[in-house]
Length: 519
Image 1 (cartoon, one colour):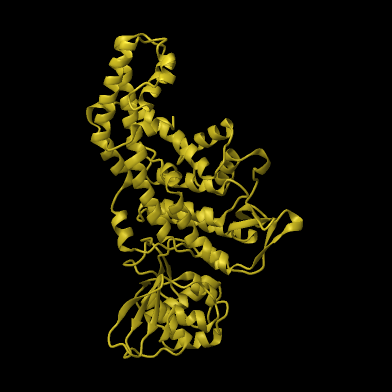
Image 2 (tube, rainbow, N blue to C red):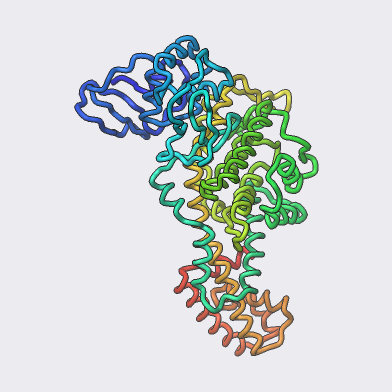
């Protein structure tokens, strides 16, 4: 079989880039085109009657035709191509659509002009095909090549999200409208007070969950600062200054930043191996000298998506939040900023929505899936990086090669899918369960108030004990409650509580007792 497109180019230029999900080959035995499994990936087999593609430039055009534009491939190739040969190839048919796209990509990504005159005729065409990619609708027109650059990002940072069938289906759903509809199912029992209390608790839950994902136990002041930040998401313009201010709010004093980091950074853990202490490196952030440029591109991408407002808000949020965590602009706090940005972007795009959807709580329940989504980007980067740890200088990481294109031009299709999955899980579980829990609390409280006069703080403790026991009071906990209620009264309340809990569980299929543990 003969490689075609990016597979050919990877081998021809010795790029050693990770293979794509679908590689293209020409099969000399095949009569028709087909797709076959090839281990964990797939191969698209072209029939033998397709024209042979012998030059790298023909394969560049074929790569776009069969596999779409992959900016990281072109950024890597344009560093090593023979520019005179490439110019000659484009110059033979400068008006053809594939050549115009290749011409534009070269000048856009490298900042250099080919020795070709400007086009003077021909319709403008989009850089990215809107059928296959999420794009902005008001792209900039390049008069020289008559290309409309409808990419969501910039040369400094340009992520891509493909319109897979799954993403297209997910993007039809507005998660806030879904959340509101689910809440309305709770009916007349839902009061403004319950909604307000549940939202306040969900802010706290989101703060705590985001911190627990980092496997940290911060002090109360640090938690309160992050809680305040989450509550104020969307109120400020997203800028470098705002990101630095946010980082300062959520980290310890000793690691507060005045600017983006100026040193290399990695994420890892210390482990014991054969009697030696070693570092298990999970991820290495972008080179420090490129962080300012990439973050400028990230913020420009946010600006593009805000002004255009056609890409769904949750896709916008996923792009910006994952872009931040993979660039890793600070020495500490990147993970929490990453999850904060989901809420911040959503609030900027849709400021009238009432609920915060606790996505971090859903992520905390699905950490294996979260790790998988992070590794979808981090594993190829680590595999390509030439790096080492400098033991004499506190295990600082040293990066010996330049693969900045892997950070600048990512494919975030899997990350977008994950964010939708977690938002839907958070709506189905944490949002509805919390409101149901408060309803159960209020109904039990109402029943107790008819029987006895108990101080409110003690009353909340008693209700927690009852609900946590599935409606029953254990012998160990009964001493506290017997200070305020008789055994007969406790039995009466237990019966009421069991009935309420079972009704809630049957109607909404939730585990009410489990929720009390998180209060």
